[in-house]
Image (cartoon, helix red, strand yellow):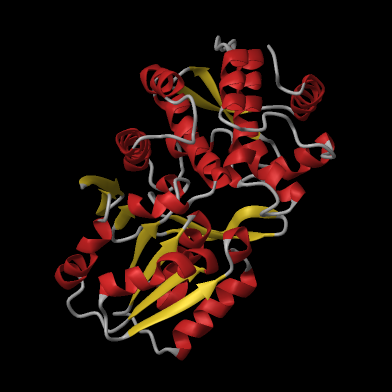
Length: 364
């Protein structure tokens, strides 16, 4: 087991990462929350059917409640959020109660927002079960979606700990592995060339990542995020760099309908577009063709999905959280490991989207 401390504002909390780390959850609860009155586990249908009993055994709590929510982005709606709050009230949770978020990024976002708003905030612990959640479970961004934009209703609310048990990752589908690995790629591109070149040379397939490779990838990604969150907890500056690829990625998700494309696969397309913009705006020298070929080898779709209007995508991007006064701001690279946030004109975005759509993102 490895422990990574996360400093966010006045909060410092541990990320425990390794195989079977949930075996240490009970002792953590006894030490850190000896006066807890009850625990609520929020999990989704898929994770619940696979691992809920194992977690219940690990927690071994008398006053324990479980709320099952839909899997994926369907969990992040006003209706599900309201239902979780109602359930917590019905079960008489109070300010000494604790929420355990058990699942992927969507469940983590939902459960964290429930914890942040229930009785003006009760503690919660993240127990991620996907590769994607190595990013979302750390840093305290919790939210639900609105039909007009992803993660538009939420808060900054830090967990008390993250128990990242890699044993849960064995049941992930190929699509979920690709979705999660996209955030590892993002961390590499915005951090340093060494990390980027390592994954480019080391990972030739997502089907046979070894346990040691997985731990290296995830701990490296978490450390990148931890370093940024420590500097900027509430995204007033450098934390926006973590949105590399997300401006177009979120627009694609919204246009296609949440859950129609995985978050990571949409972000991958967004990263390729951001690299194109970085090349045209900042003169970034990166062999984009090699990068796209590598992504294709890993099973990613690297083209803008069919049927999407570039004008409608632009409209979605104007609703992005980084945009001000409907001016779209992109996270671009000046070089590998040198991200920057830049305002890009509508005309330049549409021009580049047209090129991106026509070229199908397969060459420089």
